Length: 235
Image (cartoon, rainbow, N blue to C red; front, side, top):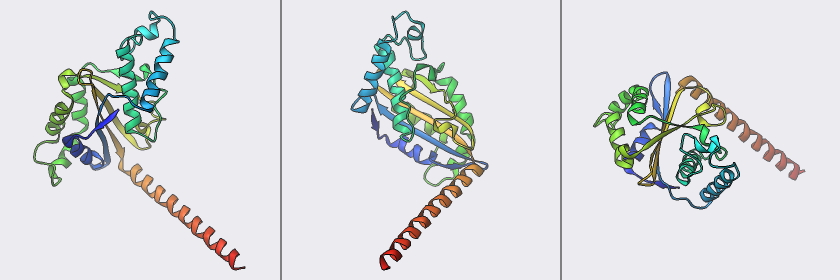
């Protein structure tokens, strides 16, 4: 998977990095990748191929039906691999390698999820309008035109990841709402990922305070250890 540096997406991504909307902080990720496997990506692909090959005949229910299509078909297995690898690239602190087809959902289409995304970004849109360098056009207009330019929405299948709310970033403490969608253009061999989380501002501030205290305590222990060592050397 190769990250695609697309200027309009990067601009939106920088804005969505942390948006204060009152009681919540909205954090978003908007990135596009080309579906070309290399290195560790190929290793995961081979591992999945071997697992499917050892799962039985193509008539097996788990192979013949899945959110990404029949897993005995190469194209369906590739789709699953691309979804997993996208998560691994965007959230490097987590490992999604053990995810399988049932962890994902195929959405009915762009129009359905567009309503969900627009509803969650109403307050962020207001901030966008008053932020220097961003408000020349409505956030949602800019968002959808940029996504369409990058991935050609009419040619996309849309998927979402079903979070377990424990072993991934969507279960982050203080999370009030979240969404995540993969726009996969099979013809162009591209995938675009867009997710947002609404985090309680109180929880975010508490986390920052806790991290600061933890880091300060660690630095204090290092100083004490260095001082102790110096005193021992003097003796």
